Image 1 (spheres, rainbow, N blue to C red):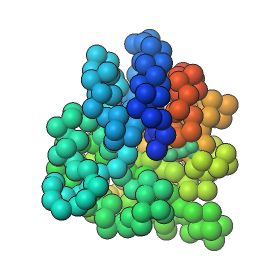
Image 2 (cartoon, rainbow, N blue to C red):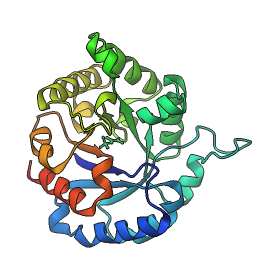
Image 3 (tube, helix red, strand yellow):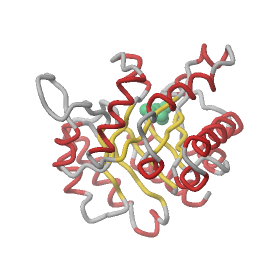
Length: 254
Ligand code: PEP
């Protein structure tokens, strides 16, 4: 499955977000979407009206950027999956490297969020990826394998069909530094093989593997044409409707 997901992060006021969503949905014609599943992940404050606004375009899903693993309770400032479900949010980013780094999310917490998302029938988009130091010391696969194994510990093959994996090398996120298509493909191939061993070949093949890290219209085609790259998780370039639509064109044509 081809997928293009836009992570707006903590950007856009509600008014700015509305304008961006309107510009995007204007360009998201059925011809342009083709066989790509488009996901938009705006801030929590924008979710309710984003779902309503995109209601008529079933190929587009709305995702939250984070969630809490408990259904309710004394967790001031947090948002639960049951709240997201009630808003008819379809998906949730889990384990983004900014959450791991700035909010100290551990692999164990991320595993609990994945479990809770699947139990609530919200598709988790699990983000994995190594730091620059880990890559320079040849640890990239050890790190990614540990992140996958812990996050997916309780997940069975049937549930795995609803999980999306985003490989996002930390050194390439928001830095302008992009993994080469060969580096990205090599990691995606390893992840695909791991999924095959962990689940089965059919499941591994149907799970979408996204690359994320400074994807822009001028580098997207080379990345998206790699065999095991099924699409992208896009940060900066998702804040421009024209860039995001150009990435959609690149993915649809790859
Ligand atoms: C991201 O936030 O997931 C991301 C990949 O950001 P950027 O495209 O800006 O590197």
